[in-house]
Image (tube, rainbow, N blue to C red; front, side, top):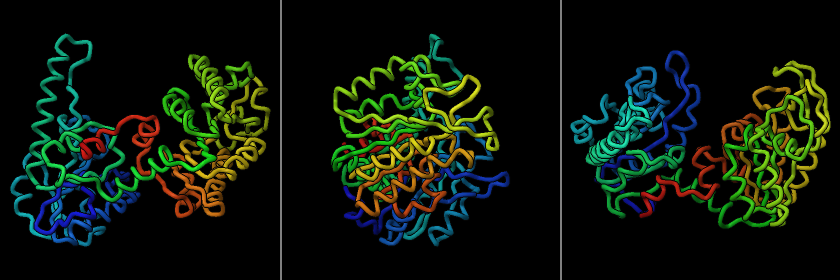
Length: 416
């Protein structure tokens, strides 16, 4: 069922949202992007004449109550965003009366789902090596189903609008969907956009298709890189992970971040790219420092000739110019991960240039661009370019798993 084809009048909808927003030391929301992201779906339910029950996680309380991670702190923010006074249920498992009392146009927010170990479905307080672990795991699975059933009992429609947790098979993201028929479970508007954006690059890409994969470790994106080799024309590998590829070829990388055990894989990837006709582009020159701090002295070296006491910190102009030409000649662009130590302004230049070029290719050449991952999104926002990108993904981990070719439980549960 498509959400825009459903009339919520007279219905109660339980909506999985992603309200995992950052808070300051006083419990004030410092960035309400995720709350605003859920607005269209929640307002659709309310404007149709339905009532809405919102459920979300916040942080990693690991199945225990932690007042600093209570969703009670964001009730006012959610109320302001929806334009209605949001009620709050202190206990996810005992919200029957509060849910039943909801009238059309009213909203209820449940407490942090992850205060309950049943949400994640992992045994608590027992090690995997323990002989009783499998028994505990089986018991927790039963408890997880009971918890999901309880949540489902509060409403007659289920909506999943939390793409950031779509790769988790949790009670609220996947298991709950089993208690609703296909006409009464659906993706929210934000989730629909995310799934469409990923399909646009992974299934319906126009060519040339360029993927820019950055970040610190090859190990965290090995599956992503391998899956992309069958789809892209150009694969730009930057950031810390690039040095593993350089060292694998015999280059001198000084103190630069790298993974020795991944060097054989790096060589395999380079060989596979050549066999598949993929242009794999690594950095040629890098901005280096002798200390890992913003005001450290900077020098540019060829990426394979970094002195022993220097460390690669950012892509140098020579590398960036090469990558800009590739990006500007692309019709589909996927970007995940910075090409330098983006947290430090003096080493964020390369990442900033990539951000500007992806935006330029989108605006001037009508390329389709998808950007996801914390630092990539931060770069887009830092330079005020979000409205010049085709789609900025809200879910880093979920997006990566989708790009890796994995099935997302939160999406599959709706579609089955």
